Image 1 (cartoon, rainbow, N blue to C red):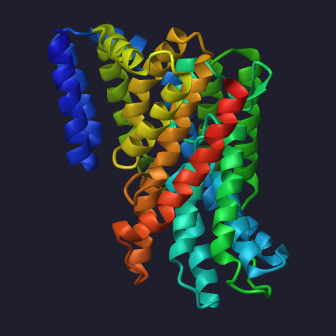
Image 2 (cartoon, rainbow, N blue to C red):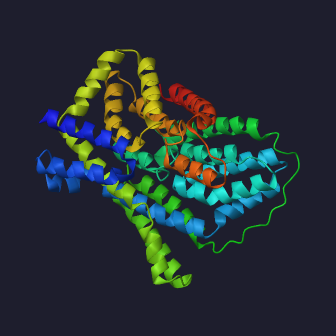
Image 3 (cartoon, rainbow, N blue to C red):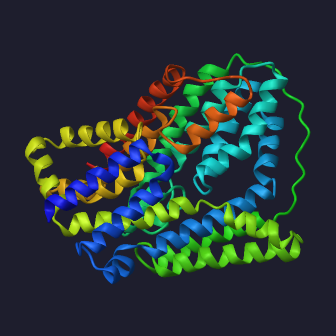
Length: 424
């Protein structure tokens, strides 16, 4: 049975690489085959293996993010930053940093979509090629998606596996956690982009301030963060309380959108329909497939193989995890990779009598920041390239590498050094 499970899993990964647009159906199909072959039972798969708390947090945070964007608050914040910045170069870098901070709580693609018009308008006013600006939006958004529990699906999956609550992303066992590693990476990234934009102009830019539609979505976002922090304080890991809080706030937001903002039933349903349901289905399939792989003992065998290669060299293991994660995530979806490699990383750390955080944080940093390496390493990159093409600035693989490669190596490098010295 082990060989059948391995063959199905390898086939699934190959199909995801070849047909990324239907990855949800590929993973669900593989999960169904696993259940039909009785590798896992239906009840075991649905109740035990699928983490419904993670899915509730994911869907609920998507709704709140949509409403936050609808309120035009992010655009207004960007306007204020431009107005208060002493020169154009600092204004652009500040907008990139703000994009990253928003992306720590809002889905990456949504963040890029709301910030893109600001970047394009400012570039046009300065008669500047918007290419680096748009790439900066994407890579900064991807970078910060790792920082908090609600930033990206990989962070949620990590939280579930490691039993991390919202607060544990900031401080864990009295030590600075993954959030601070990401912020050090962001500062390095900001300096990197300042090198590009410091000559963009010395004067200030006049802009028209965006009108805020409502402050209510911002209040919902603050309540979500507060609620997750409180749930993390009350319970270890990703508790049912956390999922229920986010879903409840999302439902309140939908009701507000329909009844207070007087949006039609059709518009409200369309907003819900356009949420990222593909990723929800994709995650359900991945949870079941990886559960089957674990049950078959394949992850344990793979961890043993890596342990034999790495031996007792802790630094080699750390570097291998980061390097492989960057390379793989630069070309394929990092979610299935992270789900498979989390237990492997933990087993490797355990075999070397290390804190598991050293290798698990290395995995998270490498796989999430590695998505910045290529134009198709992350969805936000694809969106950014698509917008540039529509504006008459086509961007090719080699063009992206000129920015993506040094940025990825720099941000991953400094974040990894932080993790090494804090958690070794």
